View 1 (cartoon, helix red, strand yellow):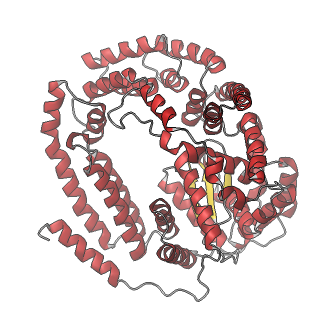
View 2 (cartoon, one colour):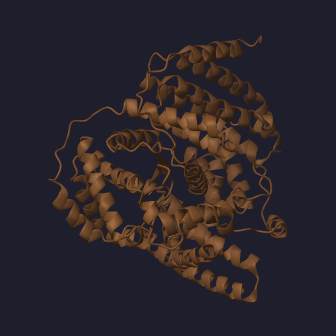
View 3 (cartoon, one colour):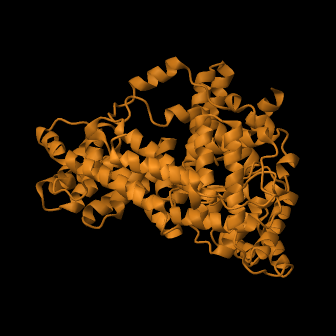
Length: 579
């Protein structure tokens, strides 16, 4: 082991092993039902893969802080609680019976203070501790559906995938496969689970019980239980948008629940705040014990490790988990061709972890170790620059090279040239939204340069025929060219009412959840989903299950809260109950 970095790492890991752990109380949490926990974990992973996790470290830390302060007051030890952010524009929160609780980006975007956040998280904790999943009003039980994920998922034949590849533009970053295609089955299954059994299956009594438990836990944890009333007031003020987005479908009885929350707010005395550090440490220990004993598949193992890190982000276990995650990220990048390696992205990830550790444990030995690795990675990045310039001058390169260049060398004077070339590449690949973003980058970074002027011309040419809603919104938001802004706004107003592809509307809603055209886009999305549902019925009647499932998947993936998706989930429940 001659490499000094490796010697440093080996010494540090040896130190971690030697670090004493804080003593745990005898009542440490445990996984009381391994089968349910594993199935619950599997669907949690499916949800995270389909909707993607929301990357906001500050909000994630706040949610975990408040969540664990409430959870420790519940007295519930059958499963370890975990709290995760998911990148869904819909304001929502939901819980799985194994203790996995999700809160969406859309909910956080409402600007909740800690009392309101406590009401939301306490409500979901209540669903778990009161075991409402055992008393679902729907016929199919959660265990039935979780045990039949492959039945509920969309099975696309190999011949069909081959046909799709032939119609997909080649992208050197990912090959011919659509990056989301490999997750298509899990996406449909995740949507079925979320829509049918998590978002709209609790009875009025269950919702009322969970509301009451959430307020009780809030008061015990030192938060004002009136946060429950205030969040419903906020929801009511946004009723038009949220009704379109499906919130009232998933959280019914709004007015009655708001009145009940107000009536109950004086029921409990607000106790003083208590640290949840010990409870969080026990949660991490329970997760790591289960991981060691159950030895789940790598996908689930990675997910549990992430849960373990957020449950208690300080100390020796957290340090080893951070190192493992960072090294996996680094090694994936180093496996790529040299000029496609995103050293800049890896270094930024390392620095985020350094900042996180420094805020928690300023004297942690992990900081020096990570800084040493950062220097090594940054040196590799700088050594790559001359070779990258040669490739750029040669005018023969792949899209992945351009993406890596912008990430690796954001201060290079060649950025406008690279952004322009990347915009051209995305335009050729049929990705106008990314093309517009890169053209805007080239134009705004050097508007008077030849590259900036060409990018501006490219934007004007695109705008005249553009029908991608998200791309048009980007152009409508820029203020450099008033004529281009007006053109984009006019086209967007028309396209929002007439676009023909579900994915187009879904992308707009994901990127611009507060855009002025959201209600119009949602209305059109529901119409398109209804049309596809009619095709599903037609193809099922003809016995063409592949075409029927293709359309089902589009609905469940891009319009999961539409009336058409609800009808599909109703049908899936019946089919699963018969199986």
